Image (cartoon, rainbow, N blue to C red; front, side, top):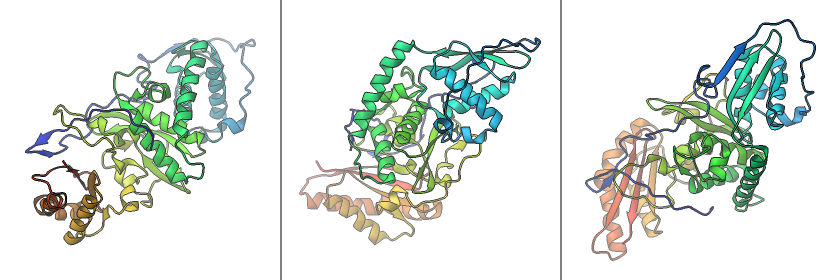
Length: 408
């Protein structure tokens, strides 16, 4: 487990019981809103000047030097027709070279918007561009002027900080680790080392999460993509919305030949802070969003339809199934035994996740009104305490109850 930075987590308390009543409030804006976001609106983000002139014979196009192998693994790149793939390489090369003006073989501003969005979705390493740009469209080409957030010298300095953070992260990865273990490690590493902060500088890119240790969903998701790509694991940057909240970003990862949804931001309990002043155990992580299925994540996420994403139908790597916390039938005696086992091992918590809504509703009242109290009585007697406290979180959306034991 990676080293953890101190985080204060606050949860609402009702009669001594922790209850989540409004899950995931205060979402940070995703980098790409509406398209989904690089170009929030033509007026706000991309200034387009259309100038119809005769075809020029002296446009200073640069020869594309980007090898196909350098871009072929990009998920969004592969969704483009060949002509737009060429534009992708032109724009990508120009931004990597820090060019003030990039000449593109297309006058179509809408196509350039899409290509730019796809580059930023594939390329988390481009942290020095805001996504804003001025496009001057001529009869048969365009001139693109990106907005850079730093100088080339500053980019080099920031890249060194990012490299240092990556090295620190990878120190904790076993060279023989499975793909799943690498994904889980990076998920936990980001939850444990990054604070959710809507005011964080550079919060739409990897620098905020890896070097600054504070970001929003775009920074979390791009950092996960960047780290996983470096381990050789395919990771797609996904954009969409949280109903009633707004724009959001997360990932799809490929593990052992199958695709899974992953949302690092939703894995971080600091994202759920309220004003009660109560704290959860320091190692608390929400694993509902690690290698989950479409059906699970679509309970509170909606994916954009700009591109088609690979289906994520497998439950094979569901964290709760892998760790004996997933229940496909309601057996009170088994649940009580499992609760007591966590007490005997002095575990911080007990979690039960049910296979469907009906099963959760069937088990809910019995767990909270009977089984938990019996387990708490066992805790009191087993450890010779005079009194005992426990707290719990209900997550009806994910059919899950988590109980936190207090051994003092």
